[in-house]
Image 1 (cartoon, one colour):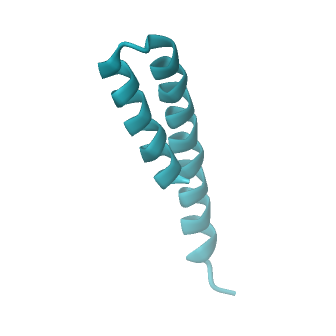
Image 2 (cartoon, rainbow, N blue to C red; image 1 turned 45 degrees about the vertical axis):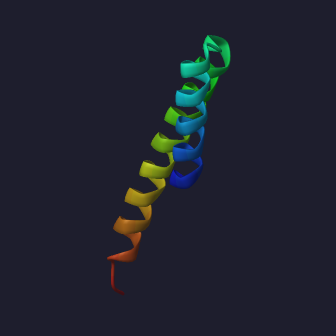
Length: 53
């Protein structure tokens, strides 16, 4: 999930440099959403993985 966020962030940076502001904005939003979802999933897996029964 985080690798996809980095990929979309790189696409946003390249699109921003080339002047495609619409594509850059969309890619930035997608990257942010994927980053947040990946971070939430990592925290959930960390919490549930530390519990011993």
